[in-house]
Amino acid sequence: MLSQYEADIIEKGIELSWTTWAKMSGQTLTIGDISYLKSDTDRGFERIFSIKLNRENMDFCIQQMIYYIKAGIMPDSMLITPNTKPENLAELLSQKGLPVAL
Image (cartoon, rainbow, N blue to C red; front, side, top):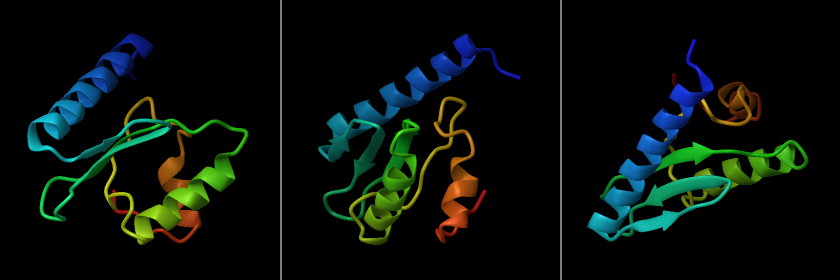
């Protein structure tokens, strides 16, 4: 099991990697509760790389996330990291009808 320090270091490395890639490639970078890199040409790298949803509006945020993925607004692939919130995100997405491949 990872310590919180180790999980934080992994998370920071992932964030640095994807934000650097976005700046180098000129692609759209969105930072927030759900952070992702979206290709402007649909031919570059795309990935949701950080998900931290709070408990207050969790169901709404997950439904909105699914809608945005299906509409092509958000990438359809994501990294589930040790700091992803909620911890059972893959299970929740699957329960709401989004195909999940682990």
